[in-house]
Structures are given as C-alpha cells and as structure tokens.
Length: 293
Length: 339
Image (tube, rainbow over all chains, first blue to last red; front, side, top):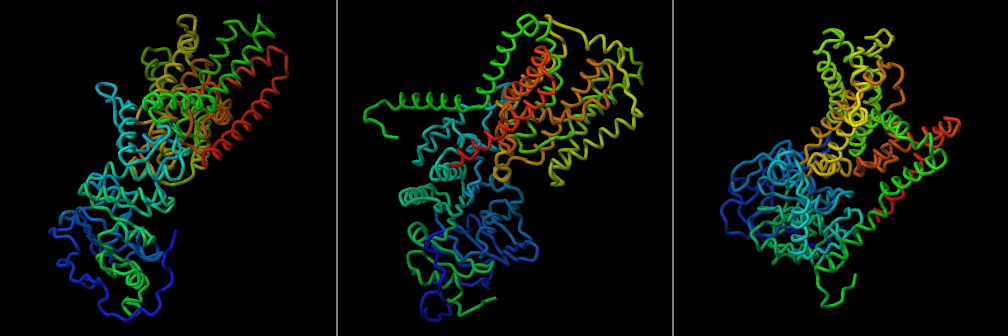
C-alpha cells in the first residue's frame, strides 16, 4: 500500500453538496441516477442497492455503482469500505444478499464466475489468482482451455502449442516480457506475475475489467506500464474499473471516481475537476459533515 | 538478460528455450530418481547376475508391483490436488470381497462371473471413491479424516461380509487371469501398464489433468477461473477408488483370496511411492512416470535385499529414509521456487 490518505485533510470546509457531480449520496432516486462523464444511455454495468453480510458484519449496505463503456472508473474507499466485496460480487465470485446488477440496462445474475465471464467481465484479483505451479499459458487458459482438433479434442486433449503461442503474443502485445513460457509462474518475478494476471484479464474481457490494486506489487516503471495498459484497454471500448489506494494512480488514469464508505457509495466525481482534498474528505466522511448513516 | 542488437530473435528464443528445458530436466526429481533406480538395478545385477538379473526374477518383481502401481497412480491424482486417500487398501479389499460374492452368486466358474466380477469390483471401488470425493468436496472435511473414516468403514465392512474369513477366488479366475501371460509377460502386468499409460496421458495432456493440477496449485484461483472444483474432486477421488477396485479384482485373481487382513498398509506404500516419485504433498506438482519409478524403488530394494541375504527389514528402514529425503527435497524446491 502506498500513500493512502489515512488522515483527514486539515480544515476541509464544511460542504453540503461536496462532489461536482450531481449525485453525491445514495439517497438519489435509483432509476433516474444522473450520469457522470458518459453520454451513453444505460450504463454498461450497473449495481444498485447491493447488500452483503458476512455473519454479523455488513460489508455492503445498499451500495450502488455504475461504469460506462470506454471509461476508466476508479473505485476508492478506506479499508473496509467494501471495495473488494463489491468487486467480488460484480465478477461473480460472491453472491449479493440483495440488490440488482444490470448490464446494458438488463438485470443479470452473476451467481457464478462463468456467468460474469460469459458476459465479458474479467477481474484481476488482488492476490492475482494464479496457479504458481502452472505455466503462464496454463494460467492464461485455465477454465477455457484450447483443445486439439478432431477426435483427440473430443477426448479432452490440450493444444499446448496454440495456448503457448497465444499467451506469448498477448503478453508481448501488452509489453509483458516472459523469459521463458515453459517454466511455472512461481519462478517469475512479482512484476511478471502481475503482468501475466493483467494480460490474462485484458485478453478475455470484452466489456469490463476489474483491477483490484493492480499496481500494489509494482515498481515505478512497471506501474507506468500498467497505467498505459489501462488507457489502451479503455481505448478499445472496454470499461476499466480500477480499485486502488494509490491516489496518484487514480488521478493519473481514471475518468471518473466513485467513492465507497461504510458499504455504500457516498460520492461520484469527475477526475479532471476534483482535488485530492475532496477525495480524501469523501473517503473519510469529512465531506458530508460526519456520519451519514 | 541483455541481448546483442541485431541478433535474430527467433534464434535467441530457441536458445533460451533449449536452456530452460535442460535446466528443468536437471532440476526434475523424476530424472534423479530414475537414475537412482537404474543404479540400484545395476548394483544388484552386478552383485547377483544369476539370480537378480534374470527375466524370471524381474518379471516376478514387476508382477508383484503391478497391483500397488494401480493404487499409486490413483493416489498421484489425489495428491496432485493436494489431497490424500488413506482408504485405498480398504476399498481394494471391499471390492475384492464384492467381486468374489458376486461371482459365487452367479456360479463362480460360469462365464457370467468373468465379466460380472470385474464389473462389481470396479463399480464398488468407484462408489467408495465417489463417496470420498463428495464428502471432501462438498462437506469440506479434510481428506485425511474422510478417507481414514472410509478406510475403517470399508475394511470393517469387508470383515462383516466375510465374517473375517477370506473368500476364495474361483479356480477359473485364479488359474486364468491370475496366471495367464502374453508375450511372456503376465496379463496382470499388461493391464496395469495399459492403465498407467492411459492415465499418464490423461494427467499430462488432457483438460482433466490440467484442472487437477490447478486445484492442487491454487484452489481459489482455479474456482475463480471457472474450474468446477467440487465436481473435479469427486472425479479424482472416484478415479482413485475405481483403480483400487480394479486392483482388488487383480489381487483376487493373482492371490486367489480376498486378503482381508493383508492390505492395511497399502495406503502408506502407495503414498510413499507417489512422494518418492516427485509428487508434492502440497499439490500442483507430480507425474505418473515419477510414481511408476517411485513404486519400483522399494520393490527393487526389497527384491535385491532378499537375494543378497540382507535382512528384509532393512528395506523398510531404507524406504522410510528415502521418503523423508524426497519430501525434504520437495520443500526445499518450493522455497527456492517461491522467490
């Protein structure tokens, strides 16, 4: 973790309607939620009123979220705000207790990872979710293996060569260098592992990529590469949701910012016109003049 | 890695890959244990050329190992998922008992018995294995406990059915499949070899194997990648049970009795073979070839010691030490690989 603004900024002026965007609070009418930078009709992916509890702990208490095609949205919030839980729900890893997920305005049920993936949603998890003992290609194609043609394919035989070549091509395209594609992921450096995980998600994502702290393990140069990659992905029309503690990264790459606090969305901003102080204020609750729940 | 400008990229890649393959071969446990096995065979062969290195003795050795090999192959799949199956010996016995019962029910010497017997054994083994898999995958109970439980249940069940007295195989089975040879090699060995080759291909070349490795390497990552983890575990434990059932039938054919009290340490022998063969107890790593070698190292030691007149108890001591060394090497390699 780097440079997370853990302390409230000094003397934030009390504000009632803090963010520039007109929809600061979750009390907004749900169906007619005003939009951020995008001019499109229905959001590509939209979550409304998501509730998720683990035992007695309420991780999400009616959280809302929306992302439009071709934009980078940063999802920020303090530790425990519910960012990871929301990401897991929107990528099909966890099921919400209540709430609606819509894609292109149509309600969808991401009750399994396959459902979200089939809808074109991919995730780079914070722990990367790589199998350390498998090769980059095996990880790339895990769960969507390429089989050989004909009879052998029907028996489940893998096309190792096709998967290796595609993996190498995708990694090179994204500037991820692998010194060998036949060694297990465990022998790669942290940056290379991250590169493989990011490249995998980006390769398969047709609509939305969630990236949970994609630069946490990276040095300056590699972080720059990942940020470039995020922009390139956005330019292909795929939406990117960046979950990060790093405000520099967020400011550098995102078009919009949505802020979670205590399991609910508390603010939305246009990145171009928001100050660091305003972000921190929204994250810590200083903006709304104390607890809003 | 610095590269001279102007060097052809393709050549560099081939070069790098060649070196990587070499490094991997040198670092692979399979190569080392294969060398150890070869060295043992050479030493015993030189010391006792007229008793050890005879085709009669070696065929005997192989045919004794054939049944354990089936158990160890199933165990390889299970351990690659980072699980364990302690029940194989019990399932073997239970399956042999069901087969013997089924065969005598239709007339032990009848032709029907010759297909009903193996079917009953394999189906019984599969059922026990699937039970293991279901409880491990959906009940989320550690495999060690589940299979310890089914070991007791299957062994106890076999004793209940037989009243503690071994059932005999029909003479048609015992003198037939138990003794038949093709090209001078016992049919039991052919069967075991064919199953081994098929499953080696399944593990290394097929999607089934890939998912098995993935679960052992990182279960959560496999699940998030869309692998049906629970179903795959049921299949893997089912396969181990099925192989134990087949082993039960072959054991009934070979020894002519169900051997209700002869298989209580089969699980440990199978696990030792798998681990010696380079399969990691932590999952995600292992090969069928390694397991084959891992089965033969204790077998050759035992056979060689007998022929040399060394007390056979030494075999247990040596195998135990080899086992510890194998696990030590595995952990050492894991630590080295993680950084």
